[in-house]
Length: 186
Image 1 (cartoon, rainbow, N blue to C red):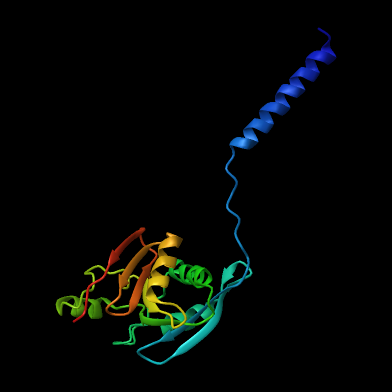
Image 2 (cartoon, rainbow, N blue to C red; image 1 turned 120 degrees about the horizontal axis):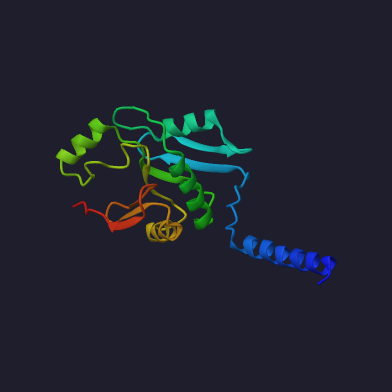
């Protein structure tokens, strides 16, 4: 064999191996730099907020501060920073529901003291609720039924979804993916 033929075969085999290796590489998930927004109405305080909370690749501190205020424990006014995952889950849920109407917030952050009191009263809250961690929101939306909200939230597979038809809200959290039908108020 001539040296040029051997070199050409090596180049061909090398190129083929490179193409095959590229096919095995999992592409990285693209990060969208599109602005993310949320619209919230707190049913207990009457406060309303519509804001862009993420733009140009980062969370906007002032907007997140305002969101944390709206989602505070309405019994004690205690604030905890909400988990970014729950904010992004709300934004995806809004998109899935195809609505610009605000989410009507029944419960956002719940302090450990409030949660313990409700737990002991038998109101149906989890002893170690994701609300305490700033990772859960109970909500509804005037433009959509709670069945539509539940189905949209389940389709996202972004965390827990609790369906509370007799209390007229859906629980969403950014914990493990799971679902349940909630406690019935009499």
